[in-house]
Image (cartoon, rainbow, N blue to C red):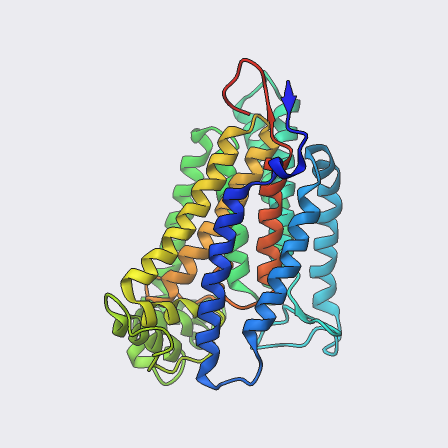
Length: 391
């Protein structure tokens, strides 16, 4: 077995290049978005600072090898649960309610910090270790019973932080947790004899709930005590123009902005559609209006390139723990991208999920950088084995 000893040769330059392109795309988009005059803050400078902090996170995580990551896993998971639990009971001076959700800590000289963004990565690490430990323990003794027990363990690990996040409440982050869990379950090797009936039942249940929300909300109100106004986001998603003065305002403006960009866009800085909070969750609307279909496709291609690269890293490593980490990071980023872009074009409901590496936001960016730090770590500790073309 041989390994690279030169530190610079261990750096994943392809991933650095992709991250640099995403950084440039973020800066260009945020600079244009903040020119609307809605805010006096310079979000571009702040985003650059957050990227620098994220670079430091990557540099720190990158030096941790597989054994060190495994040892830190449960400590990180426990710390994440503590932060989520403390967030619920913390006084408003420390954790205020913002836009109806208690999801942020106020940190002096830093601003707001959303712990759930880091918990996403802690869940990925924990699920990866649970799967790897389970397979090592049951090596050569795989049965439906052992697969079912693995499924239970994965569900428990995810459900505990999920319930804490739902208390905030934060539907978007909860969906990300579920997306990570689903991705990890598919790669865990659990038999399809268990997965098919479980996911089929889940699909039927989700479809039934949607049916009652849209067509029979009075039944939910009568028997479950759910108020119809609580389904405002779904109604405004299905028929935004009837709610364009209230819950559908953001979506109708986003559709107008992206649609008016047409093929080539209106040109950088030539936005005409006013869209509140366009530098955060609706940053893709800025790209669509100014750069059109072509510019939007280029940005989406960058995400596909990032996901492809992480997939390649996961397939090349011989360390199963690393492979599971790659799958978790891919699941997280993929869901973020599809959900964010989907909600800006009206394909999916609005959930407040930012566009990874592009939208302004310190917590989200640092969480994503922490995830990429794990991928850099895998490549940093990359080893080539004799008589093998993979590693």
